[in-house]
Length: 430
Image: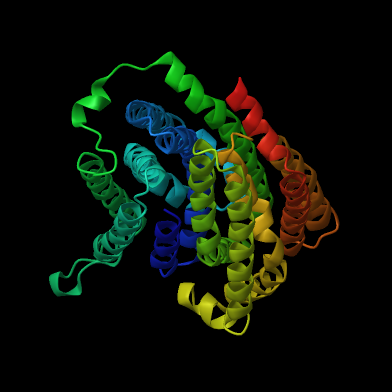
């Protein structure tokens, strides 16, 4: 999902800085939906991983159908809401942006919203498969979806010269990514119904909701949803701050976040693995192994991110040029890439550790830490540095980095104190 967003940003950026800014605005809204669906999928994957670790296949199977149905239901509601309220939502999110940018964002957002149910199927299905030990199929599907996104989107955006067709621009980008997501969703459903470790028959998805299973999913899903929701609302507020700084700064911000998403792919992959792995180990009552694997994943992610951060520095200008040929936008991108490389050592502690804690059902600590850090540092400090002290986009990013360092320190303390493990042991005994 992350790579698809990067690819779409690159594809659209050649239209111009207005289109790049519009993608950034749309993504800031879509990431709220994505985080909500991811949190629900996370709750299901932890339940399934722990049940599978205990060899309770029936509960794992029932949990799979419940999390899939819940995710699809929420996604349909979100899809309808986007069509009904896209204009007022964008009026708030893109406050201060130029009218041309808002018009492009409205067009793109409505097309992307059609893929929300497909996104729910893919996220929930991938979580189910990872929970039962099949990580290859979700990875393969993700790669194929990105290839399809390029193959479908490029001619729709820029046209086909041989046919004297100029393409659909932003609308073509939305059609391409939506089509790729729906094809990917179909692939995930096929794998689920034929998976050897846990086959989920199609009629399993027709079963009514179970209050007890939903409660177990939501015990993790609700705090994770609140955490993600507050986090992404915070990002929306910073987006509003940036929107008032002009289209060049907005475009540079969008491009650099796209680069950051690419750099963070190993960290995000290890975070997803940590949730499932810790949940499975605890389900097998292997607490010592869970502790050691949590630490190993943390250091692996940290090493990988530092290495990638260093690699981006000498190629910062070339990376910016992949997205745009506007020198003013590239200058913003280069400076932000330099800043980001300095902050990579703490990223894994900030985002991989809370994912690991969720595998142990330690979700409330992560939720409150993320909320307080986001609003105290990224919002308040970002405003003071970026707007009040007039440091512009660089002040906004310094506030974000302060958020990383604060939550990273608090999560490291949580890991070393082993209080996350006490939360699991208490929930298990109850």
